[in-house]
Structure formats: structure tokens, C-alpha cells
Image (cartoon, rainbow, N blue to C red; front, side, top):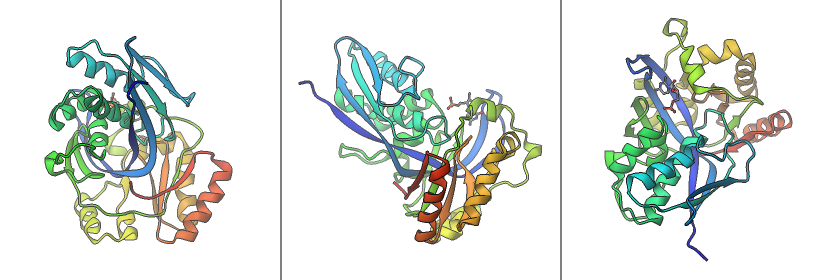
Length: 299
Ligand code: C5P
């Protein structure tokens, strides 16, 4: 029996998503608060002399090199100059193409997991550099992953919540606040991140997040006050294209959410409820229409 390790990979939601402008490299300059929620994939890793092999219980993800987890394994193995191979099994729970960083968090788990499995002993900083090569959300996902080794988080990042700038890779950790009664709904279609960002126009944005005000609410820990500061500027692209996103936001608020917004580039929408029974009711009702409905708390 070869060794197997299992890394838990949490989904993220964007509590705010602001865009400051387009950069010369084609990416957008972000100011976004990212937060990990207790909706997790499990990544099983074991040495495989035949090379890198990927499998999953999900039929929604590619099992070849186009999968970010595969690319993460390839990058790790190549960078470390060994011909090691690995079997990766992705136990998928996070909806795909949803704006919840499912692919990014799986990739981050592969980086952390292989570092431990093959004893590469790379620093947190080296892992974060590799994460940023793979994708803009991967560094955040990595930073929030509970470390198995005894080591300190660098960059002062405190686990599962961070203010992200740059492409999303420049992270400042926020103190831990527990958010409860988060209802996440993934409508029955996917959205392409590149397409949503590509269609973004600053002059079409009606409301920008106020990061200063958000941080003040965050410090109080009051879930409803925090929810009231949630804004995502990418809704200015997605809602005109897919009215259902706007309708879901309204429905969550009608059902008692303090506020509801889209996560990332969508199409998932989430609402934060102050009242647990109302959140339960909303999740139950929406689940009848949307199979991918989840009631979660912070990770
Ligand atoms: O970094 P990642 O590969 O996840 O980004 C996917 C796409 O999203 C990019 O190709 C780009 O079009 C867009 N994007 C962006 N600005 C960011 C992050 C992503 O324009 N800060």
C-alpha cells in the first residue's frame, strides 16, 4: 500500500469585489475581501511511478492537463527536478464554474499536499509564488489551508479571510470572524471568468464597495452589519446577461437575508442571514429549484 495523504480544500466567497481599473498585462486591479467557507473538496494524493494521473467522482471537471490541479502537480514535479508521479483523486463537492474558486482551491491543495508527500520542504513563500503562476485565486486558497506542519503563516495572514489586491495575489490577513447562516445558490449554468472580466466596464458600475467601511464592520463581528457592506462590481456584467442572478439576490433578501451578492465572477449568489430558521427555510425552498444550494458557515 503506498502512502496516501488527503488535503481538505475549502471554497471561497468574495464578501466584496471592487475593481480599480484594467492593467497593462490585461488583468484587472482588484480590491476584494475573500473568505473561506465550510464547503470543501477532498484531494487524495499518493505516489504513482507511472506519472501524473487524475481522477474524480465528478463528471463536471476535466481529467487532463486542462485541470488546474493537474497543472499544479506538473509544476511542482518539474520545479523540483524529480520524475516523481502522483495519483490525484478529487472528491468534488464545490460546484464547478461557480465563482467559488473550486478549481483554485484544488490546485492549492495539490501544492501543499505534494510539498508534504514528497518532502520538498518548500517555504510558504515559494509555494505562494507557484500558486500565483497557476491563477489569481490560488494564493488565497493556499494561505487559508490549515497547515499540517508546525510553521507560522507568513504575511501575517490569518487563515481564512484576507483583503486581496493586485491580481488577487497580494494578501493581507483579517482577524477571524465567524459568519453563520450563509446560503449559497449556484444557478444551473456556468460563467467564464475571462469573459466576465473581459466585458467589465468601470462606467457601468452603479455601486462600488467601501473597503474602509467593510473593515470597520468586520471588526465588530456583527454578521448583519458585515452583510450590509457586501458589494460585487462584476454584477454589472453578469446581471444584464443573466437576469436570474439578480432575481436570486432579491429572493434571498425577501426570504430574510441581511444582504445577498454574487461571488467572484459568478454565477453563484450567496446571502447572509441573521436568523438561523429563516436561513434553513430559504435553503430548503431554494434547494427544490436549485440542486446546488448549500447552507454553510465560515471554514
Ligand atoms: O488568474 P486566473 O487565470 O484565475 O484568471 C482568469 C481570467 O480572469 C484571466 O484570464 C483574466 O481574464 C481575468 N482576471 C482579470 N483580473 C484579475 C483576475 C482575473 O482580468 N485580477
